[in-house]
Length: 315
Ligand code: MBD
Ligand code: FE
Image 1 (cartoon, protein in one colour):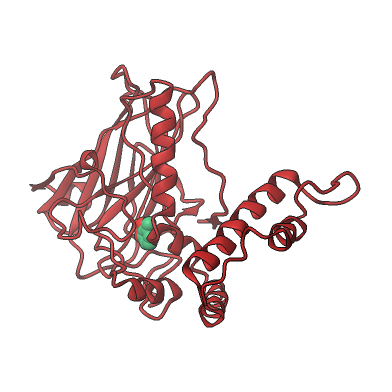
Image 2 (cartoon, rainbow, N blue to C red):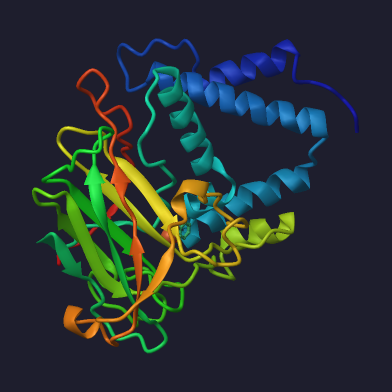
């Protein structure tokens, strides 16, 4: 069937009424921006069906897939896996470049597994609450500075990462983790320093029976990430930074299903001793120095704040 109907008046009229494009919104809840976006996305789908001769069976497979995606609660996971979240970063990077903003620690995607509400400590926090026999001790520390290299006091450094199974507390199907295990928040002092005492994470893998992995299977892709640690860094006088680093040496560093790896975000892992004095579980531990450079606000505004639904909990 190689009929082409997209450009007919019937179809173009259908797209307009279905999205209520240009509708009178004065007396109802319609929203012009929403109508514009839905009209465009619907048009792109209709056009693709025409161009690629997508069959009714294929369309219904796709519609049904959306049901499974919602049932599995994986829409934000899929957004990472199909590069949509990376694409938003590429656009933010380009917007920064366009106004000459550079010099900060690179951003990279937030991912779907942040939980707000971790207890805030001054300067240093030990965040491994639950035992994890497979995971060795890890110190993550650094200094938060501005683009002139001056320490930033009063910055809130939040971090979150997986355990030795690649699972995050609050989303762990094994039930092995409680509360804010491997999630922390530290306020920097006058020296701008922060430190987390924790355990070495292992890379994440998508739930094997979930909708995201199902789509990736159809593409012949894996759904794994290298070991990594997420950060939010918030300061009144700077832009909020969303970033991560990868654990040096992980074989998936340049094969991340979510495309979050950046050259500048692979700090060295250094073997140290003296962990006992720090309250680590063995005297030998690994140390990662990750210094963070925040960028100034743009005309007093934080233009990189992202509002999206996030889980929150109380410690
Ligand atoms: C993760 O831990 C993650 O960071 C992303 C982006 C997607 C799935 C799991
Ligand atoms: Fe993650």
